Length: 192
Length: 268
Image 1 (cartoon, rainbow over the protein chains, first blue to last red):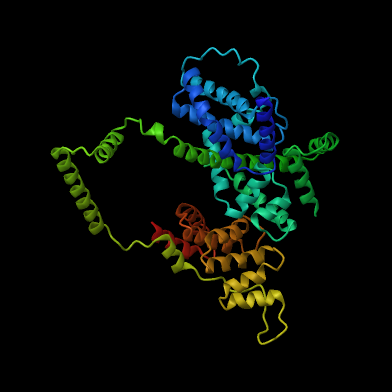
Image 2: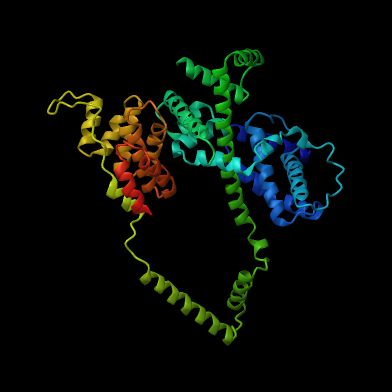
């Protein structure tokens, strides 16, 4: 019964996140952080710093799956999803650090299978990441906000207009197109 | 909406997973036949990756900051040398214990040395280095109005004429109000950028000028670059300003080549 209530509250949270309330990321983190850190230290041989780092990545992956529409229904509570993703992140980190991999009977079948982890590993090359981020960081504030709200947080044009207090949806479209062209142009220059 | 906008919209829908199956198959067929459409898709995907990487970093930094505030208890158990000294000091305050004399003496000596070092640096280093904002102020001159010919003294001025009259008179706030009512053309954006610079609203100026500085077919592209460099300077993004100024300084015939050379030297 209690689990059912948790699931229903989580479904509401998922819906709120999908509706554009990305500040709820902080709530997710705060609500489940202590439990995950304690679990990761005791069962996954992770130190506190690595566990926190992995849990941050898990929250981001969960968020990206939610807003991209890859995760629309929950078969477990959000905590179970976050733990499953975080656990994979810790294994990866442990492997990188050549720590001993713990035996995990859950690994073969876990809620993390419903999550697209490639979202996290797609761009793994640090140099390339730096090049891509630098191009974005050179954009003006409004351009950066429009492109980020549209392509990352998946806001509809009308919501972007309201959020950024722009004059009309048409103005957002024109500005978005112009900003996108600028970004493409910057990215077409060879990497230094 | 022109053809290019429609194509971009379809590509956006594809990349964001918003296309129905039949529409996606149709687009895939077009992509296979149209190299320019495929190039547009590739460029947009690369731009989307840049947006993703940058925002991942923003979210990560936000969660790291949150972690910092939540992990205070754990951090206080850390045993770094600095932490040991601070913990000792904290304990002294809370327990009322006396700090040993030799340690007090050591702190006093260290404080004196730090003061002497700081004073030495202050007096030895030259103090005539201008700040980025001072350099902006020394170099900013609003670009003359070449967009609208205004007949002064007339009562029935159009919104555009009012915008540029206010601009010429240095009433940048008023100019921006009128410019905001006009169509968002590159020329109008250029002068809006000038007005923002005049008001020292540097991030807004960067917003207006940045896209124009990338536009090869915009007649004032070179000017937009110069003013964008000034906006970066005003915003204290000196590295970005230097990068643009170096390009201008190396471009023969650029209307601001000489100014860029001088400004670069001043920054250095």
